[in-house]
Image (cartoon, rainbow, N blue to C red; front, side, top):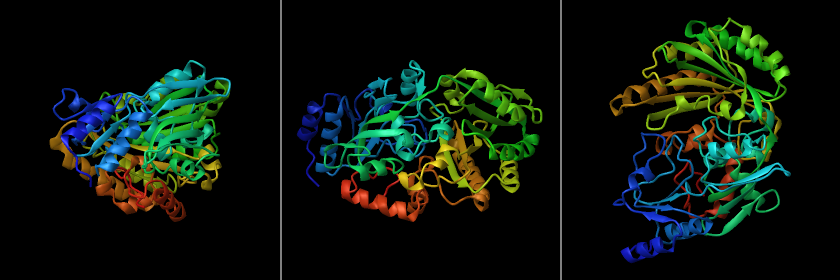
Length: 454
């Protein structure tokens, strides 16, 4: 490890176009905070980068001085991998340039952009790409882990829409990864997480998306088993234009309910026909499905995921939405300790499964559903009971799990362990990712993540 002197730190800060924050700076605490309030780490330095050259400079500085390195895009990852203790945090949040080519139907966006930033710009052209269901989520973390979203059954995952990426490698080199350049790196970026470098820009394919038929129907908890069983059968023949998510949650009046949230991306007339059986079943106590701008659909769940709460998640892909799995989830939700916690079932299939499994690092494309136990609560004193509840629900659902896990839903790596990281991929894919890691980051500089070890 090279000696890190005050003079070296001072020179490093002066060489940045952006700003170097230290613990004594007034905006340091705000800069180190991320969406999940359970994360309370204190980097020795935060490099707020203004451009790609700043990122390369910061990578070189961290490598040459043996510093622990983390990378912040949107800061929305539940594991808190954006921030590290005692090292250097590269902060991309000031890098938000977006360029749209409406003729080519493509967009290039800097790594500090959130989906709110990107969707707002593309919506002006009546275009969109698959993004996360919470607008505050960063485009970087979501895409690098795969990218589930409302458009995935029609247009594929976020990573399936990635056309190219600019990457600062562990050697400080600025590389382009695409189907024709650094092809192995391009494959690894689409699902392998932040293991191979700092992605400073993403180029996506865009699709004509303006109005969608979206919203939700709501059933009381006592009717949730039959409604979920109906949803399972309904989704078997659902067209690719339709993506559904079922969420057990607490309503504003404190009643426990099942919300079935839908997004139909296609002809509104055809969408009305397709969704009619779902809207008539029960019938629901509320039907909030209506034509709406895609931007409105993207924000439907944002109020339920506010920043500043303690968050702890557990997840797995499901073999299917069986009656037994439904019964376990509904029974467990009766004892949920926090009104802001939820159990979600996400429908996959469609374009997600049509894409060849070998095309990207993202794994488990054949899974029909994913389940996610989303626990959140405001007070630190309530942490133990909420974590215990989450783990117990996850454990009770394991008999119905497909074994794999979506890497973006994994919690802290020190708790989850290497086996859970490996569970995000097939053994063959994991071995291929290890080979890519050895090539582009042999020293494991980028290890504050769900780490693929060289």
